[in-house]
Image (tube, chains in turn blue, yellow):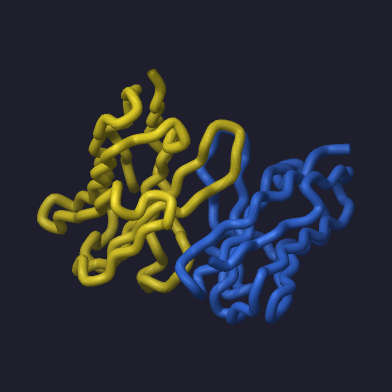
Length: 107
Length: 118
């Protein structure tokens, strides 16, 4: 099983700041098979990025992704109030696993 | 749209069957999955089924106890859960892939709650 470790556990930032979220895999995965999801309280998760860097439908361009091998990053260039949420990375290269999540909270 | 049903409170060792009803898209073109979230915890992929039921997958934590199936004529997917344990307590989401069985999850239901407790 591929284990995904996200860091930090919590990111405290102000609106307008840049957020950088990390996802590290226990073994190398294809860049085609790494996704990020956003979950707000009381809501189902929502696909943000797939294939490491492709934005899902309706996702603004302040969201971007990068990485390869075992290290992947989700960057939110300028945080908007609606971006404060929990973010999960997911690999779908070998079966499917999720990271434990990073909470982006208002500072 | 994906709408889950069948969640309930059950005692350990008992069985439960979850249903997922799909609408608004060509159901037979998509793989469907179950993802669960224990209270206050993260996401865990549980099971998945391809459009033609030829490919099935299960997490190790449920293998041998859970069975996924689908009925394309009814636009529905089912999760038969046997030998339930306390650690199966979670909100169970029905999820759709992006048209590729090996793709990301691009649509989620609102979930149905399963509570396993004596």
